[in-house]
Length: 327
Image 1 (cartoon, rainbow, N blue to C red):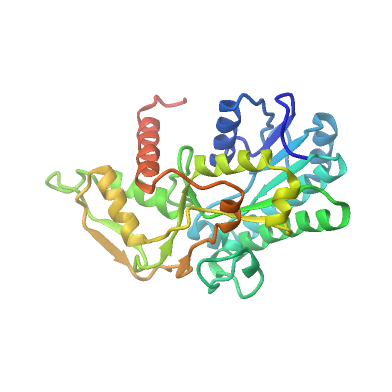
Image 2 (image 1 turned 180 degrees about the horizontal axis):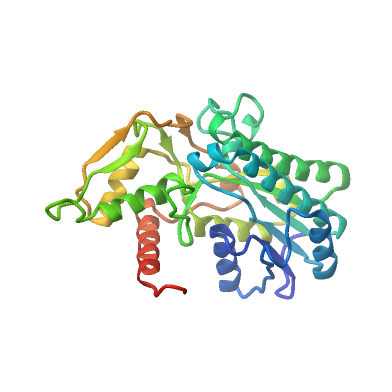
């Protein structure tokens, strides 16, 4: 059942994360209320706590944005944490939503679910047709389990549970910690910190992992939030006609090399830093471009350009830097 009433109870799992914040902003802009719980209030890795929350709150709609996320370094360093946390969160929420008769659940995954050498652009049908990228396979397997859980509940019980697979996300609320962040915020921070940091006040060199030749697609997080709300409003029969398995890619339909991404970031920051490549570090998947024809057929397309998205993200990052400690 699709979203029609402003009185509907919408639970956003992971409302403090980058994606969750964007979804909440989008819902509020449309005049919808939402509910959320912090990890201290409800440990979503705990089945009993999660089930009790659902029985008490009785949400009509669920957006499952809660996850343990990170870039290549974080995935490779903490494989057990990425696997367990994401599998437990997804399983507990999806099952609790089923048992409390949620009208519609939207599970947010990642384009890393597709094989490392999948045909480009990657279609939903390419799922499970080849080996995964080794550096983030733990996260990918957890997300595959979640989307298959949704598909199984629809097949067996008719649950209106959908899975959205966004491409590489960035935006307001992003993680800029160099130990755990994804490539775009990591490069943005490096370029920002190198500005004027040379011995004579010139822009210092910036080190980039790998060759810079892999190609990636980047989606501004507020565009993903727009896609989520768009799907909440779509009648189920229209969605299933396009996506019988309930799986939908969300992206911009265009990619660029990491070298070109760096050039765009330097342009936004106003940097003249020379770029140095650390070729001892992995490149990851050679190319990741999503086929977004299913979403387009449902009347949705991303509308934020990469440069504009980076500009907004950089403005937010600089604002956080100037805030007093403790805020």
